[in-house]
Image 1 (tube, rainbow, N blue to C red):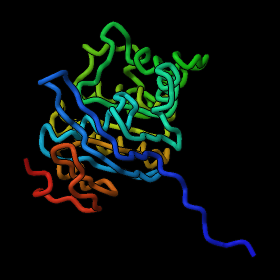
Image 2: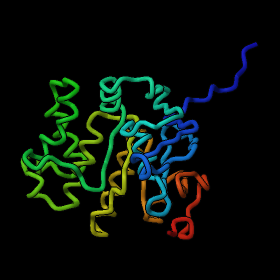
Image 3: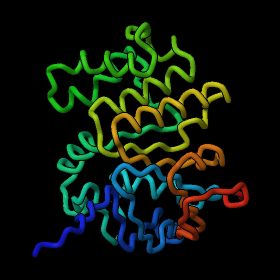
Length: 242
């Protein structure tokens, strides 16, 4: 008689014994030291730790923006280490949304054009319509034709969030998404990011120094000197201390 037990779903993100060093010769630094981690599909995870601990580098490995020296990285069950650069870029563009602290908007393009970029790279004929919809979703329906210099910091980060979500990625990663914003704008971005993540069922991984923001995640992972030193569901101010 077949078992009635449910089949466990595969992790959205899986790292196995990941090592990464940066720099050359005497200046080479071992950043990640045998990191192993699983993030479940739909889970929200906060990466915290002192400056220089390796948390942003770990996020870049998870996003497929940095290739480790050794170890295995799987996103949605796919071993991205086995992909060519072109294949990885296509996979990342379709499956991973990325929000940076510094927005990274193209200054000569309007908000609509900035959001449409990843869709155009996928050959989507409806890129403009989707971009407009995403900008309305983040409250910028009246700012479609504005350039980054005409937008506040909070509005620019909303454009960056809309751009990250436009391809409807399974995984959303954010590196200090409120780091360049004032408190009010930062709170607004956090509320929006978590609301959109819930609506779409995306997996969220974010790097933050903000204890309140980390505590909103399902799980908080503390990193020190390139290693995971705690992996739990509660965050305290002490765990974030530098």
